[in-house]
Image 1 (cartoon, rainbow, N blue to C red):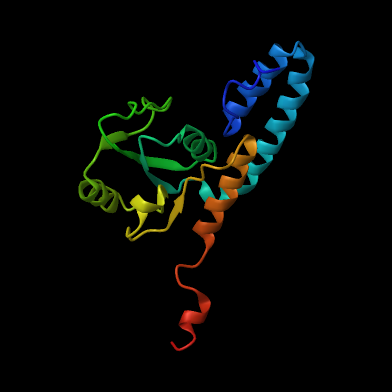
Image 2: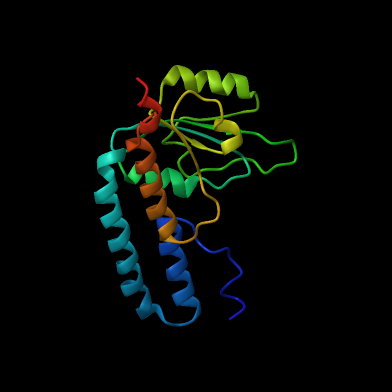
Length: 181
């Protein structure tokens, strides 16, 4: 049993599917994988269908660090039809592991450490939403949201779809601020 949990718990849709297959193989219950994966796929596809209305064709910039695992969030954005216009990765020191993404060939991934230069590029791209680390996205003149790190399984992707959709549909200015206008 100890052998099963050597790997970290999955985050996002694809990691969850792989994890289910791996666990079922390790415990000798391969027949349980298909129904479990079917359930995961059904829930994820239902959420995609619902939230795609808010995210499809939205221009998204990603601003994160080389210490954060973001592939699950990129996968979610792409599956929802968002246009990921850039992925800027801030290096956090010489001793960090090199950044890797399975989307490196598909997306415009830029690695650097000058936040003013990165912010300037993002501002010139005029995204609908900037997602990433809150310390990096603060001060940008766009709607922003963090990439949560505490969520696990396919539910991380589903919750993130809802979170981003809510930010995109929310008014820029709270209603009560316009009462005196």
